[in-house]
Length: 344
Ligand SMILES: [Fe+2]
Image (cartoon, rainbow, N blue to C red; front, side, top):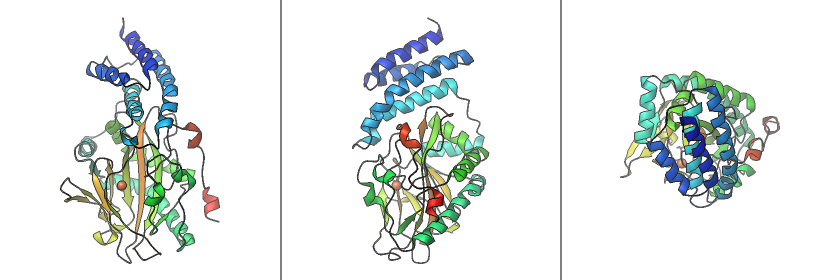
């Protein structure tokens, strides 16, 4: 059997076993003994269509399982990531990263976080600066009124009650307009972040949620609190990028990572600090800012994704603790608030 038939045969077997644990051992066997990377366009397209067939079978299984306890261990999500890796192996381009970028990815893999270089942060700020402006406009309009998170969050797919995670001293910008999302795609490419992320995931990726918010001191509004040490509970492979506006100090209630003994290992301080974190696997916290030191934050949630021609940026939302389910295609395009509506 030639190599292309071998692979297609593998996909046929997979197709019959989607949703079954047996498929996992099948993948493992394949990964231990991979065949050569496919280069011919005709072969690629056969592989892509087989993968799409499997994806269609996957989607209902994944949708059925989201929102349940154990999402972070969910087998269907793990298999989705493996499928995305295989698709990337055969149909994607080798990520183009220099030594510094590879070091950042190595740090993210080994330490579960990496600080973004100042060059990358400068490029990202071309876009993120606009989001911070929008956040300030929205926050002024919002005043001291507590705003409930959009429905997308309450019906999102982290397990647990996401409403409890919304602190009253955090003011959210519940929408990021399309022109900013387009700009974000540009700065991901210009900063090489897209290449670094492909190297890290071993697959394409999507931005499943963008959450900009202003973190005020406790007492700035009635009620409020701070985010103690925790691990996020998101599907396998999910990571976060965060960036903060201006010169951030400990008084701003900076983001911190901690080791197993609860010693602080990293503090996001300095000028426009920013980092990537495998937030489900590294303990972290962000204490509330001191009065007069409110902190503007952008948090971006990213997940493995099958094919790049589908939308990279799926939703600007409120809470990346409960992002939208990227497998539910009909939800992707729904917008809860339009920015024009928001700024009236
Ligand atoms: Fe977290």
